[in-house]
Image (cartoon, rainbow, N blue to C red; front, side, top):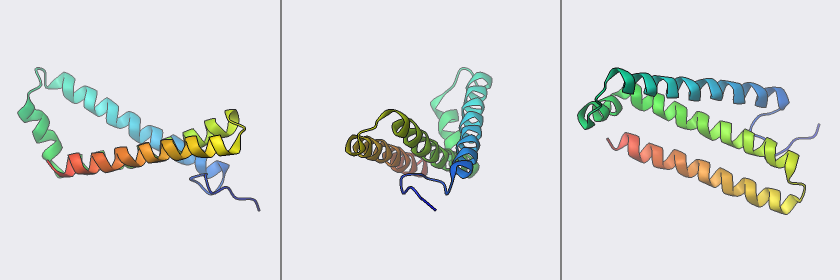
Length: 115
């Protein structure tokens, strides 16, 4: 059995399920935020801060950030594998994207849990 260390899942089916599940989480988060903004117009700093101060919202945001990391990891791996044939360049680009995704996760954790 051939494995790829760059793939997030164990197999193509696992990656397929992970990317679809993460897309559902990301879409639900965006829909929730758009609905919250629409229903709380005009949006104030106090209401926005109150939303993100609640523990369920912090957990939802954390789950969404992890879903973003998974979605980015798998998506970038798939695109770079298809279009960048030079192995060193593909590895460098994938490393850069994964570092950026982990940076978003770290920044999100600091920002959300610091409220």
